[in-house]
Image 1 (cartoon, rainbow, N blue to C red):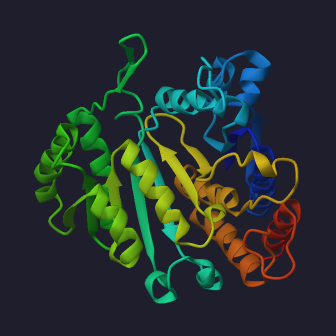
Image 2: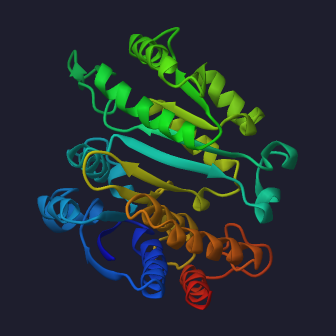
Length: 354
């Protein structure tokens, strides 16, 4: 099978972790006799530095002409510390989502037996936790009208959703629930926000079309609490853009490390696969960052973009083996810690030999 990738390393630790994921991708492609082609593109701060914009048209064309996008991270302290900057790396991520029509971010939250003791929650709370958070990506407050008035002393951000946007993300949520444990939690703030009331209204209209699925509704503040108290009670969670941004980062912590969780952003055009963590600029170039989330994102890429579950399964098996053997980076190591590149080599070698 021909596999054509766009590879966007981005900023900070992005190039290092993407390099390790590509080792796994190449090993799997070689083992299963796939024809792999790939091309690198600029995005984020490095793209601003080189061409003046965070998501250049050339990068967009590369993504549109590829079967999938493997993405690292975006962000640079130079822009974080300059509130008056007109162009920011994060604008590139939002533009990529908008232009590719990536309306859904899929984040599996799954604990690893060998790392349960690393979770800030008690073992009995997190052992066996396994749910999927689906976040709407192209609507809401991040894309609504925003600005300043009263001489810059009043700021506003508008949260807007259409029925169509809500229906398509809920349909995806129900599809996932049907393939899993048939439970869908719709997270909103319908007691306060009009946009959330539309979310709940649409969900209540759609629920009878999925009689096998138990649909529950939960205010976002309650959901934030229950993720910590009873993470095993969730199966599929679906929510709007900003709520999803916050809740999925909260959920990621229960696994023991932010560096372990992958994600897929899917929609109208080419899907993007990326770790959920940021660019971690403090670690850039030090060969210490955890590459596992990016490698698992590559596994999701084989499963979702290419419909090659065996290839994805082998990558997951290699990652699980590396953690069982304690061949991991310093953020989750007990005793000897290995370099980012060493973990990438170990996992690629496992794939080649199994």
